[in-house]
Amino acid sequence: MLQDKFSGAKLRDRKPLDTERLSRLVDAATLMPVDRYFMQIRRDLMMLERPVGVASYYNWIQVGESGLTPAERFGIAKGKIRHQDIVHYD
Image 1 (cartoon, rainbow, N blue to C red):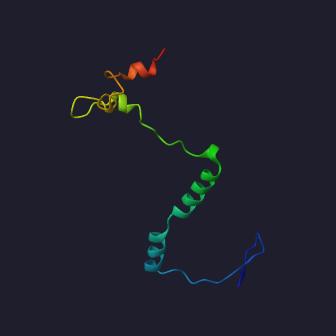
Image 2: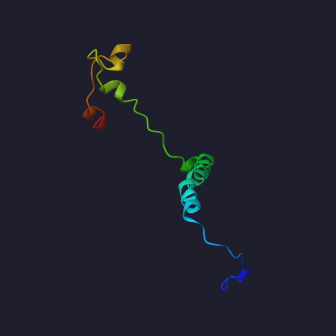
Image 3: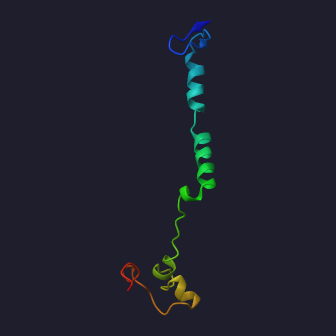
C-alpha cells in the first residue's frame, strides 16, 4: 500500500489499465446521473426551474395551409395579427 503524502490516505497499488479496458470505461462515461440530480434539485426549487417555452401566440400569427391562423379557424379571431402588434401593444 502507498500513502498519499498530502492527505495521509492510503492508496492501493494498481496495475495500469490495458488500452481495451480503458477505452470501454471512457466509452461508458456519462454525465447523465449528474444532469438528472441537478434536474431534481431544480424541480424541488421552483425558482430555479427552467421556464417552459410557450408558443401560444403563434395561434394568432402562424398561417396554416388553409391560409388561416388556428385562432381564425376556431372562430376566436377576426383576422391575422402581426408580431409588431404583440410586441408594441398599447
